[in-house]
Image (cartoon, rainbow, N blue to C red; front, top):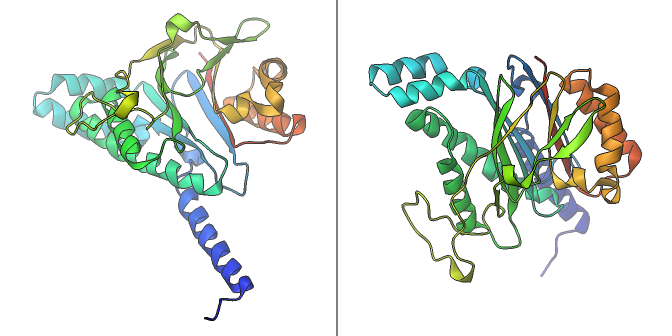
Length: 303
């Protein structure tokens, strides 16, 4: 039996990876996706470990620019759905951020991130139709789908939160690092008190049993608890909230955070979120070579 020449086979594999990269890059956020919210400035950075894609993923939701809120409000009002109307009005003063991290360091982990991307954005349409806002029901269903379609060693962590114009950040975390607050004069990075956090396992590790049409056998691990929301307030102009993947917290052998990051944030805290992110990116790479995908999002209260 004849065998394909190794150089032709390698060329085909490279072409397939290039095709995967092209598909995955279409799901990555652009500058036009960044939320434009009064009193709040948001930007972020993703640094894949290999090539241009990886297992980290970030999604921004500017409800005003992504969805036709005027039409949705009018239709809900005509149908007498007051709860939906109220929720959609609140969306005008909110922006959402999702940060996820697929276990592993392989380029092909981007496939799992792309699955999350499509499931979340498609589900968001129906959430706004039904409730006028994104609720934890969506994430219960996403968790169930990943539980049924991935293995125990291929899971993902995820944090989704929404920030209001007043600086209140409502979020839930599925196995993901909790947000950090940078505040005070001089600024200090602060961990949120445990009594402000509700922690859950990574997405797909345990089955859901809340709002499910089809219950699955959870095996010996049992069902996870229904998702709940945590809250934190950015109280003063200049306060920062930092969302990140574990590639950021573990960077440089866990020596970058908090001391080195604090000094960078203090030096550039007066600048906009995009400049803060760029200074962090440059300093991260100067401090040590990455050993994992790194993503982080800066949310700054400006007024």
